[in-house]
Amino acid sequence: MKVVSIVGARPQFIKAFAVSKELRPNHNEILVHTGQHYDEELSDVFFDELGIPEPDYNLGVGSDSHGRQTAAMLEGIEEIIETEEPDVVLLYGDTNSTLAGAIAASKIDPLVAHIEAGLRSYNGEMPEETNRVLTDHASDLLFPPSESAAETLVEEGINDGVHVVGDVMYDAILWGRDVAEDESDVLERVGIGEGEFILSTVHRAGNTNDPDRLESIVDALSNAPLPVVLPVHPRTENRLRKYEMWGRATSEFEAIDPVGYLDFVRLIDASERVATDSGGVQKEAFYLDTPCVTMRDETEWIETVESGWNVLVGANQEQIEKELRVNRYLEEKPTPYGDGTAAEAIVSVLTEYIGEKHMEAVEDV
Ligand code: UD1
Ligand code: UDP
Image (cartoon, rainbow, N blue to C red; front, top):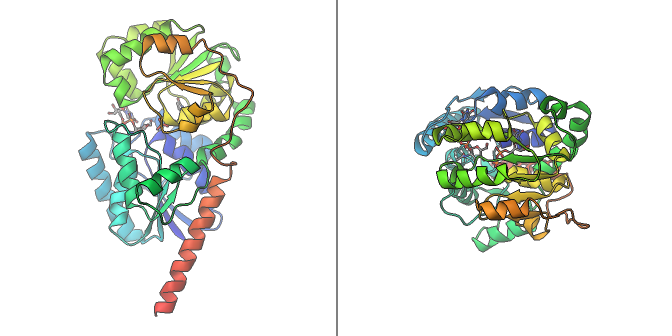
């Protein structure tokens, strides 16, 4: 089976790492990096430390407006699909790279498969919501991480090709947790002890583009009960500088450059709690038994909130400060996102479909 995998942004490298490990031993994977993320610490670091093979293609699109960025990707991906003639195009998550892959592939021949299908925030202002809805509706095979995500697809009229497989990020973290504990020296580098800090990330457009929301988050974190370690996404650094809050961020927090996956997993595992607006980080905190305060008004990962390990606080200063002090270490934690074998299940479903397609082609001759 020949698979073209489309990646472009930080979380997609981690997801693709988990799937590639299962895919590559028996199949031909062509890896396409759109170049959406290009800084060393947002891209190369993941390829190096996770041993992800060099991309076969790097479109080098870089940063731009949504339309121009997606259009540049679309043009490049279409050409690659026409040249490579894969059986499957594999898409991850909800970024502009995902959407470009979906549009290009769905109008050509290959099966289009979407990993992390069926997730919804129902917030139409999030660019990711547009990307994930359109991608789901352009896909032939859909891999929701949970039963509730599969139900969402059915509610939207998508009944065929839906396979609940679990979350590939859970696969990744089961591998990463122990390796990170052995290999990462990030706590020493930051100069902070286990259980003695809050780990925070902020990068959602809805929080960073709005100076009032961003200021409210900075105010809340500066009153946190423990020191705050803040690996700063470049989008956020740009906005903090623009709104003249960069000085505060660097003096009031342990503001550091974005770190690699293993360092970040170590930081989540060692923190007393996480305060984030990231999708992936909410889940990773949940997997690593670290309570999470989510600085958004809604989440796609509803099971983490229903379990009590995660709480939604928006960008409300009072709420953030309050929830950073609530004990959320609970006795029970459900396992809604599979058992850590999502990648294996995905490869097995793909193999079955492609096998059937080839059989049909032979019968037609
Ligand atoms: C993108 C995804 C978001 C995902 C996030 C993961 C979209 C619409 N958004 O958001 O869903 O959660 O990646 O981190 O696809 N920049 C750099 N260096 C880089 C990349 C970006 O400095 O290597 C800066 C640029 O100023 C750029 C800004 O960050 O304009 C935003 O980058 P972009 O890729 O457009 O969106 P993200 O916020 O990273
Ligand atoms: N991550 C990382 N270093 C960092 C911050 C995050 O390796 O400094 C990883 C994190 O472990 C998770 C992924 O990046 O796997 C989440 O990416 P991000 O928050 O940028 O995007 P989202 O998940 O919100 O789309």
